[in-house]
Length: 333
Image 1 (cartoon, helix red, strand yellow):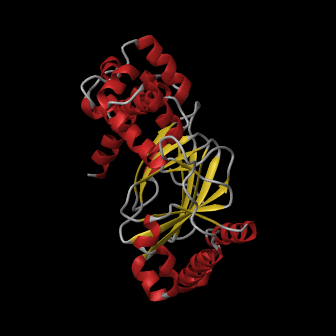
Image 2 (image 1 turned 45 degrees about the vertical axis):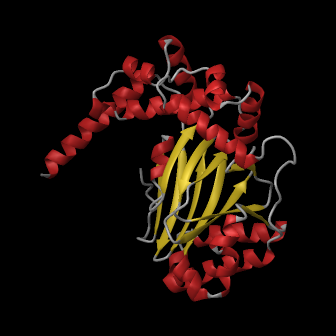
């Protein structure tokens, strides 16, 4: 849904009431969001697009697991607006005053807390090459070694404030060249002010990258395998690890116990299936069982607690949207 404050073609603001809808509002990215805290979702995105450049600010009232891929041949720099809880990128905890970095075309994962906001700037590599000096710290080799970049607090606050100013309705008065030049200067200044790449978090147990890989395999088995109701003992056997190792890996990579994490992922999968049910014709019971919920009453309670509505209400909304789209398409023809 677009706000009424879209005053020019460069800038747009959208509000969403579903996590995946919010994810899809960011243009040119491939994203999937899963809601991890309880209550009705509300997200807001303001975005400015120019050739080779994208600046945006997004916020969400619920904790999320975000699978993200920026557009290819580009570099993303993320600036958290404020940390209201634990933030993770690719399983690693992000300290305060830290900028996030990822190359375009490469998937990464964020776990964000409630009431979280972030500013983002995506710059095409061709634009960086034209600018010259900005590309050195954002080369593929440099980005492979770091997913975050600590800044001195004054430099961090200035970067955040200047990005916000580029998103205000009056910013297009600078013209495309002026906006592009200011954005590239901000990237260059942030790289110049950055501290050394953070070291590994912790020096014993399963390292974050190993933990993340173990969690990925566990989710693949539990969510996409033949037995969607697989218990922890079955996962341990399938993965060839002890219960303690699996528990540690989930805590290290996600901050949650295995069953709690998998339950949230299953509930989000069920929500997506319910939203698609207008096309598939599937019913609530069928979707719940297929997603690993054999106790339908408990499924309905857990679903309502997480999303603030019953599964049947989601299904009704999905069907109403499909009818509205068909009616609009018919009238347009």
